[in-house]
Image (cartoon, rainbow over all chains, first blue to last red; front, side):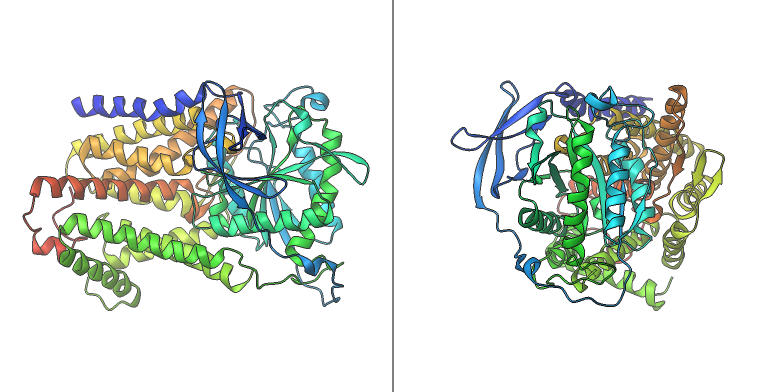
Length: 356
Length: 218
C-alpha cells in the first residue's frame, strides 16, 4: 500500500513540470539578439539551448528565457552557411524515369485558420488538411508520387505525436525519399508570416527540426538544403528554421521535416498560395528539379548530416553500455569484461554459437 | 537515399534490434527466444494490421509485446507480483494519459520529447512498486496501450470519430519503445542502487559473467 502511495505521488510529480509549463500556453515569446533587436516570435516558451536560423541566415542559440517579460535572449553563432546550390543554375540532363516519392501527414488535426475557417481549432477536421491537400496536388504536379494520410490524431496535445507516429511509419514503409508533417503556427501576429513572392500575396513557411534523435544532424542538413534552394528560387518563402528539443517523429527517417504554413490568424487563401512554390522548392531540393520523373541530380558531396548521425549513434550506444557496465561492476576492468560479455552474447545469439 | 543515409537508417534499426534483444533476454527468455521474438516484432510490424471495427491492431507493435506481458504474468512467482504489475500498468496508463494532456504540445515548446517520457514513467512506477525489470516491461507496454484506449474513449465521448491504432508503428511504435525504455531505466536504477548498497565489494562472478541469467533479477 505504501509503495502504491509513493507511485501515485510520483505520478503526480511527473506531471508537475508539464502542468507548470501549461500555464504558458498561448503566450507569445519575443526572441532577441544580444543587442536587444527582435529576431522573431514564438508561440509558447522556447528553451535554453534551442537554436534558431533566421531568414537572413543569422544563427542563434537561446541562452536565457524570462517568463515574466516573455522574452528570450540569444547568443550569435555567426552566419549559418547554407549548402551550395549553384547546381540550380545548371541545366539538368533529362534521364530515364525513376520513382520519386514523398510522404506527408498532419499531427495536429484540429489546426485551422480563423479568418477563413471561422475558428483556430476544429475538433473534427481542421483547415490544415486543405493546405496539406493543396500541397499534395502541387507536389504531384511536379511529377512526384505523394503518399498522403488524412488520418486524424485528436486531441491536440503532446500525445498527438504518439498517435501520428503510426501514420508516419506506415507512410515511410512505402519507400519515400522524405516525410513531412504539416502544421500551422500558433502566434497571434499574422504579419510575421505574411509575404509577397512575384507580387502575389502569400504566407511564408517555418521549418522545424528536432535534436533529440539520431537523425538530428541529417534532419537539420535537410532543412538547410530546403532553405538554400528556396532562398535561390523564392527569397523569403522560408521564414526561418527552428531547432528544438523535441523529436517530432523525425527519428523515423533522415529526411524528415516539420513545416509550419503560416499562423492561425492568416487568411487560408494566402497559405494555399504558398503551396505551389513550396512544392517546386521541395522538388528541386530532393531531385534537382529535372522535369518529369528522374533520379537525384543534386550534388551528393555536401555534408547531409547522415555520417554525423551514424557516429553519434555509435558513441551513444557505447556510452550507455559502458556506463551500465561500470555501474554494475564497479571497476574499469570489470566494466571492460562485462562489455565484452555483452557484445559476445549479442553476437553469439545471432550466429548461434553461444550456449543457451 | 544516399549511402550515408542508408547506413544511418540501417544502424538505427540494428541498434533498436540489439537493444530489444537484450531487454527481452531478461524476460524469462533464452537468448535465442529473445532474438526470435524481436524478429516477430520487426517483421510482424510490417504485416497489415488486424482491423476490428474502429480498432486497428498491429501484430509486431501490439500483439507480440502484449503476448510477452501475458507470458510474464503467467510465469510470475507470486500473486503479489501479478498484482503489482497490473496496478503499475494502470498507474502508467494514467501517467501516459496525463502527460500527453499536460505536456507542451506545440513543437517550439517541447522541452523533452513526450514519446520518451512514457517509458520513463513506466520504469519509475514499476521499480517503485516492485523493483522489477519484468514489471517495468509490462507497465511500459500495457500503460501506453491503456492510455491509447483511454484517449479513444474520450474522443468517442466528445463525438470525434477516429480510428484507434494499437502499436501500428510496429517495432518503432511507442508501445515497444516504452517497454524497452522502462526496462532499461529500471535495470540502470537497480544496478546503481545495488552498487550503492554493495559499496566497494565486487559483484558476484556469476552476475558479471552471466547478467542475463544471474540472480540479480527480481
